[in-house]
Length: 201
Image (cartoon, rainbow, N blue to C red; front, side, top):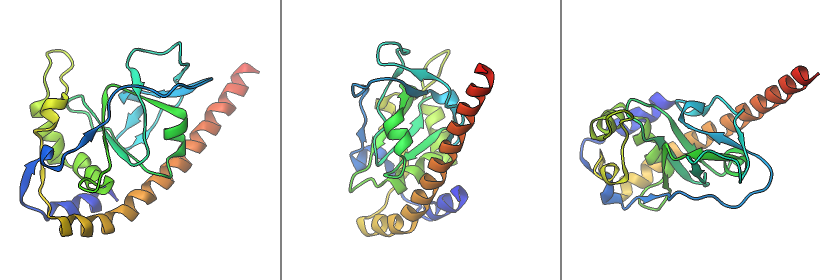
C-alpha cells in the first residue's frame, strides 16, 4: 500500500521547501499521566509500525528523551539519518495516543488544511525525502535533522485543488493502515501479557 501512495505522489514534478506549507511542528512536552505508559523510541518502530511495546515508563521514572506527546491527526518521522521510521497517527490510533509516549528522536507535524496527514505521510515515506533528510542531517556521532533544516526540505508543490484531490484519494488508505496497525498493536499487547504470565508463573 505504501508503494501505491508513493506512486500517487510521484506524478507531481514541481517542488518547494516544506516551510511553504507552514508546518506546525509538535513541541516537546507530555500531558500529566498516572500509572504506566509504553515508551517508543526509534528502535521500537520498524518502517511504519511499532514492533516493541515492552518499554514501560511512569511520569516520574522515564528517560529524558521520553518527551513527545502523540496527537491525533499528526505524522512523525525519525530525525536520525538513514532511518526509515514513520507513524501517521489518526483518530483510530487510540493505543498510540492514549497509552504511548514517543522519544525526541521523532519529529512530528500536525495536520492542517494546507498539510493533510495523507500528504505528510506520502512525503515522509518517499525515498527522495529520506535522501534529502540524510543530506541535511548534522552531527558527528548521531547525525539527525533539526527543525531549522527540516523546514528547508524539498517536497512536492501542490495547488489547493491538487491537494484536495490527493487527500481524497489517499486518506482512506492512511485510515485503513491505522486500523490495521491498531489491531496489530492489540495482538502484540496480548502476546506481551501472556508471556509475562508464563514467565511469572
